[in-house]
Image 1: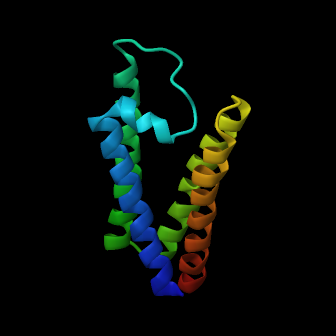
Image 2 (image 1 turned 180 degrees about the horizontal axis):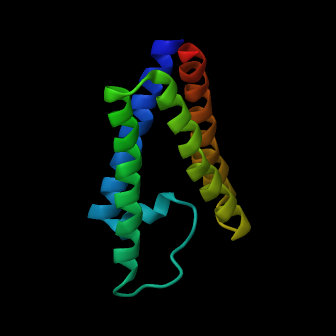
Image 3 (image 1 turned 30 degrees about the vertical axis):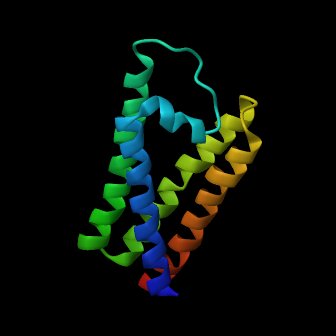
Length: 126
């Protein structure tokens, strides 16, 4: 289970890096899978979306870096902390009457997978 959890952590990290790259490279197209429509279109919207992309890339790189140079328990704790991001995204989308399907199906499921991957890493380190 421990190796499986590490594999899931790698997949999660790579997935959020890919999503971040999409937000940097094609920010308007990337928003279609988030669950909220853009509030407006203008010169600054793409810039704001690219900021999200940079943060997504760094979130994934932090997990990968800790996997390379840190103990597995710390990777698990980082996954638990970073699981707050998709939970927050889900709650914001639901509060704004966005797509419940994407809120639960993408963000909610991502948070659950992150927690399920984190627990064996934390317990294996104990």
